[in-house]
Length: 311
Image 1 (cartoon, rainbow, N blue to C red):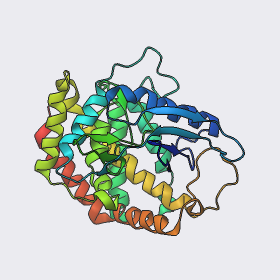
Image 2: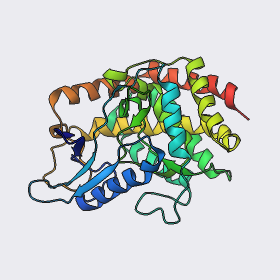
Image 3: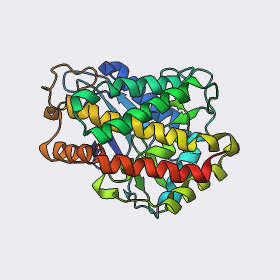
């Protein structure tokens, strides 16, 4: 992010495409994310798109500069719930392209998680953690094989607490939207409150307890006119989002050791793309989240929440 001093704007300059897209396609996708989310009133507005060129091989977006502080948990959970409720209330367009909008979002999520899980053997997890994650992958496959399907809305798919800035009026602004898509809203609720999310960013680091989690989900459900349709999916999709997160950790552990690519297109997790302090931070978090005690802790949390939200 580059602040354009005195304009109230900043430039978002991509380092890579986490969706594996060529530079121009990624920029169009990211622009569509901001355009689709803007009517919620809880995201920066898009002002211009600078196409890929020699000086900007991945291009840039010009968006509102949001003045605010990092989210503080658990006190900002109601504001984050309100932001997500506003985003999820937006009516889906007749034509969702270019955003991802799989006909079967559960099957697509299963496939995405399984593709990342291919890195688990090379990531060399301890057996206890590997076994629990493998059991979770089996449960996700069973979920996708069952006939029931959750409602689908515009979701951020990257709404962890570090991606919010809280303004002086208390509104939580979701400032990072490059992975938005049409899918089940409980994935966003999970990404906002999972341990793997709330302890990721040093500025918003927090460990939430069960009452915090229950209150957050109930606040969101009460803000949705069709909350009853979403409630049965809260825990299964929280589990699925956790699997997405830990398999991403395995993927990063494997791919971060590769040499940086020379092309501006696609996905590139090489440690050579980021500064040493950031790489050290990510490596520490990845090691922590893949450790047997944390994997066991997450399984216990799912069981406790299931007792509160199971149909």
